[in-house]
Image (cartoon, rainbow, N blue to C red; front, side, top):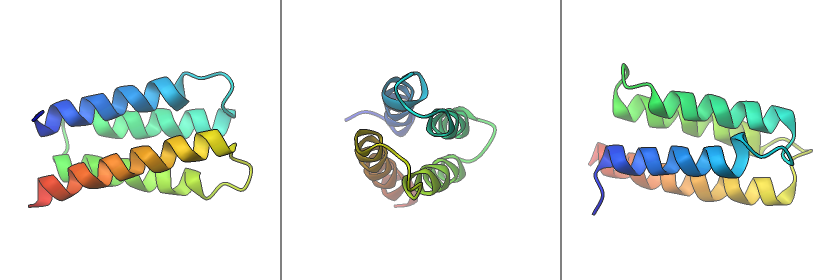
Length: 91
């Protein structure tokens, strides 16, 4: 099984590929996704804090009434991945 850091990096890469760098996604969603990636990759903070900050950003994005359904699904999948990683970190 991949280490916690490897899983975080894979999730950040997925977030970048599916949302942050996709010009078909609204600008505010791309910016929020990039912010979440920045939180995940900020190794100066504790791992659980990095993941929690990214989860908060993505949860806020998922409540945007103008989010396209495909982007919403991607956010929900990534949120589930992050929550799973956070559970493993805190146990």
